[in-house]
Image 1 (cartoon, rainbow, N blue to C red):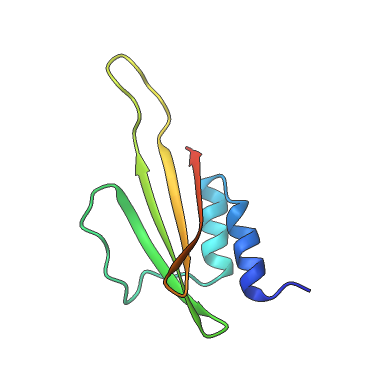
Image 2: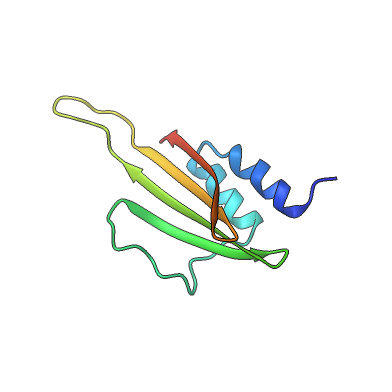
Length: 94
């Protein structure tokens, strides 16, 4: 049987749309409350929670790879931190 932290990692690694990110945040009760947000315009949000006594944090960044005369989808990048260590990074378009 998977621990909650193993399930967290598994669920996170399957996120590939903004809707799935929202569902993931709801499932693990991620919140921006009490977390200092980055001043960088490319960081959309930093969310966190405590699971099994361990702090978890998700940082959501994005960038627009479009150039002149190009209209490309934004690239979203997510980083999952568990106990202050990066454990998984994913990227998807959208």
